[in-house]
Length: 116
Length: 115
Image (cartoon, rainbow over all chains, first blue to last red; front, side):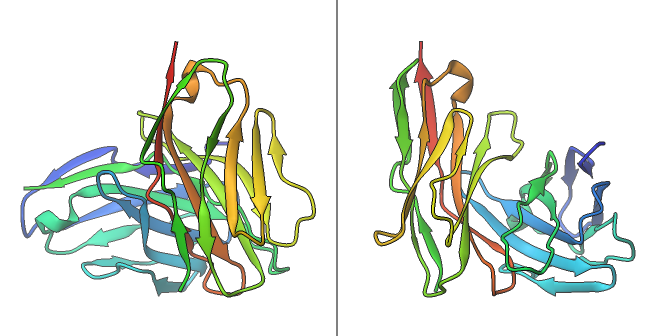
């Protein structure tokens, strides 16, 4: 049981380049999330998904896109990378039963992205 | 608007002592969840403990306990018998169960355990 996996672990991009950060979970969780963590700060939600085919914006979605074609995968696409997107990116997943209980989010190891 | 406040940017604690990390929150919703996560220097985010707004008892998980004072809107993390491996950043987070399910995060507290 691998939990939440992310690739790559590190990446350096030039301004204007694009890339996709991969995220996969094998826990059959219905919810998935992408966060970014800037140095010395807490996490900010970029996008989230409540199930395959359903995505929605979080607090800081500009410059990113997501898709969720399967329950397991939730890739994050960066178009036209900018220095402001230098950050650590975390993918997380959780299972929501819809009963009102707050479900715990489990995180991947993160991707450290530098845009130069 | 929902908000999480962690007022201690950093703390030094002697090994084997207990430590309390402060967290206050602000929400107008009656139904919410509170979480604590640990982030060691290696960078991963590790779930520690959860408290629901309707839970009657304070949550406990091994050496971790949550001092939940609903009227004061505080959810402090207590680590008993601290160990060197407890040195890390600690984040408090809140989730509005009726909202869009995103976690609202505090800025974190850097805990350093001294031998």
